[in-house]
Length: 424
Image (tube, rainbow, N blue to C red; front, side, top):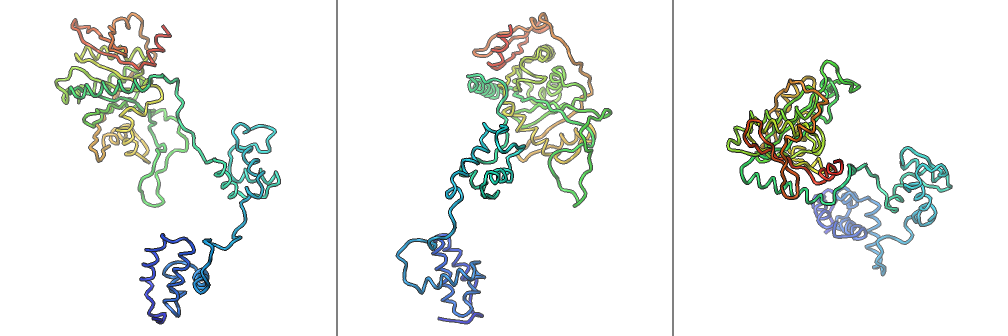
């Protein structure tokens, strides 16, 4: 039935086209919209174009195809459409482009292009200098053909790799699982450093349009406000955090005092029957596997509390595997995004306000103590740490200075142990 343009139901045409278009190739879609045009009658071309978004010329060409005899060929388009790719008509251009981007030739003085960055425009200009008529867009397509893409730096190089790294992780996992099953606390520790003052803080947050927070241009340390060192302690089992905000040097004495405060305020209440604490930490920093003062201060803490402190250090290059990184510190960073850390109290409040949908809560207190740098621990003092052995890992039983036997176990990664043995 042929009907006027005023009676054409464009909504129905659109619905039929959307339902069928993905099942057709280009020629099939062209024939479909042409059939709709014929069915619509007068005004059908404009109506079908509005309903489907297909160009008038395509609908008219499809109508001509409907009236012509069925083609024997299965081609979707006419022969000869489009010109061949430049890499086909001029194969030499690919070879020249490959020489330009090949890493081994970068910066070679005999090369026609010395660059700071390999942008498409610079590569196109260099190819035109070699008598190739090429645009930046074409260079991008040819780079894809050659297997090149834009790459960022990847942080994977950090120290040497021990052949039994997987075994180190398995050992840490066994220790954590065993102590959690026994109801003993397992904590993950790490420290950061932050500038105090009107400095830019990463990220963005909602504010009135055109009213961003104004901050300093340069990140020079404010001599009056200085820096702070948030030392974090994350309780793996309870999904809770504790942060001691140090205002002095980030030393092993400061790190152990943070653990001491966590135990006094949180740990002794949450784990009243605990006799051992497992600490997972990075291999470096104030709680590093080679830091003598860290072990000596843990000895003092063991003497004072009667607890055993078992420390597992992660292998080099794997600090982000430490639970505190992706369970607590990342959420603190998200909570204070785009907020200048203008004072120590502001930092304490921002950290303490950190929460997540999974139930994370964080307590924070300011540690105003001073901690001296450069404290040397002698061999005689280290000899008071009574080291014993757990299969596969060095550990120790540290005697109490109060006359009772208090075990403070020090677990270190195999790589660190190998290096320590070499130095001895």
